[in-house]
Amino acid sequence: MLLVSASGAGVGQFPQEWKDAQDRYERTPANDAITRLQSRIDRGEVTLPYDSRRGYLPGVLKLLHIPVSSQALVFSKTSFRRRLISPKTPRALYFNDTTYVGSEQQAGALEFVTLDPRLGAVFYILPQKQKAKPHFLRQTRDCLSCHLSGMTDHIPGLLVRSVYTDDEGYPLSDTPAYLTTDASPFGERWGGWYVTGTHGRQRHMGNSFAGMQGNKVILDTEAGANRTDLSRLVDTTPYLSRHSDIAALMVLEHQTHVQNLIVKAGYQTLFLPRQRFLTSGGVRQQVAAACEPLVKAFLFVNEAPLTDPVVGTSGFAAQFSACGPFDRHHRSLYQLDLQRRLLRYPCSFTIYSEAFDALPQPAQAYVYRRLWEVLSGKDHSKAFAHLSPADRNAVLEILIDTKPAFLRYRVGGSRR
Image 1 (cartoon, rainbow, N blue to C red):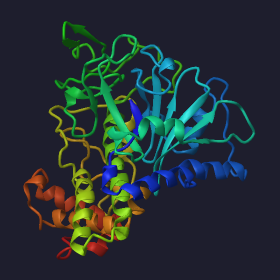
Image 2 (image 1 turned 120 degrees about the horizontal axis):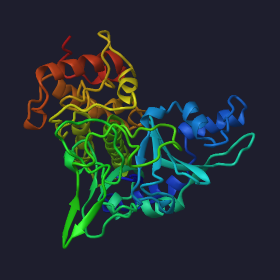
Image 3 (image 1 turned 45 degrees about the vertical axis):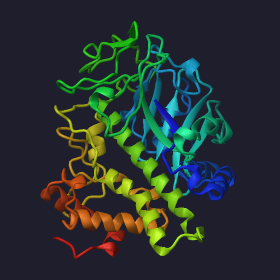
């Protein structure tokens, strides 16, 4: 399920600065989608409506511009509120490109994770009690006690997990658990999730429960395949949608992974000017080590290809593909492909995020220069061989038209 954790550099690289950063994370006021919404509520500019059945959920999704079509249903008991989650009462997740909302049946509060450009992932709850001016409550210790660990490299971020669960939603012990990204094999995705949509001959772990035969885990992936209707598995009437759209899930796992890498690059390069022992060459090497994984993730270097088309059920794909900005040929990095890969034009839409724009200048400059090198044809290394000349040229033209800062770092002129 969606958890808050991170992907980043080890604490040992910048020991004191890293510890200071964690302390500042808890002390520093956030400036994110939730704090901005709270300010509008406090000033009386907007009213957050309360629904008698679902509390603040419909209203807050509308105010945060989070589509209902993004709904994903998780039945694995892998969150702090595991007692409320089961195959009969899955947790619902909703998201846009900055904010994630979690809702469980009978829960006393909604849960939020949103990306602050400086801090990374920030956590909130919103009590489901009707008030004239409801108040989002920032969470630190409770969330960070689980999600800032050695596994997460002590940087606040996001991740998606796939696990083998029994028919009550409990993860099976001594079985693999996968961190899901766009590089994950299709067959390792969505264990513990409901999935609606078709995907041809490809098989995933969703919609099914696992068991053990001796030391071997058994999962009937055929039974969970190509489901467009969940009515035989779960009653979806308490939810805003009857879908758990496969296209939304694919966007979710790509987006959270790249957002982690943006957070990682920011934290790793933030303290470089203070490292007096580093030469200028050492600084360049540290920046490259922090940012090259982000360049590769932006350009889908390790993406697992689709072997059959994927078709969702909720309308999410069409809504997402309609997002801009668009170039002069009406192309957008948000346009989905879902035939061979996730995006029609293989460069991540997260390049437009506040978090990327807030990266320290050395990190941002490195990423832009490397993108120019790859997309202009200067870099033809094996890592980027999956990008055809048409792919490179299309992405280059889209970025030239839609990302003005990109032009400052051109290498060898542009190709128009």
